[in-house]
Amino acid sequence: MSGGKDVAERAGNFDFEALRAASNYRQALVREFSPFLNGDVVEVGAGIGQFSEVLLRSPKIRRLTCIEPDAEFCREHRRRVSGVMLIEGTAADLPTGTAADAIVSVNVLEHIEQDQRELTAYAGLLKARGGVLCLFVPARQEIYAPLDKDFGHFRRYSKAALRERLARAGFEIARLNYFNFIGYFAWWFMFCFLRQRALKPSSVRLFDKFIFPIAHFTESNILRPPFGQSLLAIARART
Image (cartoon, rainbow, N blue to C red):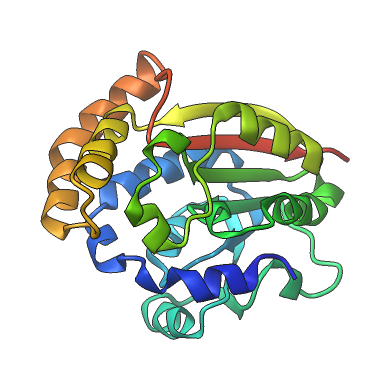
């Protein structure tokens, strides 16, 4: 099994309503991944389809297959998103012989206790075509907050730890960088210092509309940050 129960049992507290406000954030991630989104793409941990909706706008994706282990999330995904294959399960439930040109995993790996096994499964799906993993995970264990635990996060990642796991799974890393420098301090203040236990839609909307676009432009075009709230990786499976 490839991490399914971990996600299904622990993801119930995740605040999709608040994250609905983060449209600029999702679009920025797709732009970062877009050079590698072509052909047959698998989205792991698709939730209720908020990211799937943005992926469907990528013109080079021929077929999008979404995987989600939680039955309730799948029902909402089917209601929101059409034109994709949705599998209720994990990467292990894909049909035998499935090959992909790209796998997208956004804020999923931290929910899976056996994350090394999960990455190895991804490499197996990508190996035949020399496909690419587009991976996004929470960063920096020092800002692991009570909210992380509520969300079912086993860990936050350092750059060194993620690099080592990807290499051991059979990937060659094309890019690995921290993401959302300002978000690091916002997360620490709100959820480590104040120990808040929920995302507020109004705060997410404010950050996404007025702060994130400027910060992300700076990170993308001027200087990648030395640390951040998250890590973004582009890694190609070794053939």
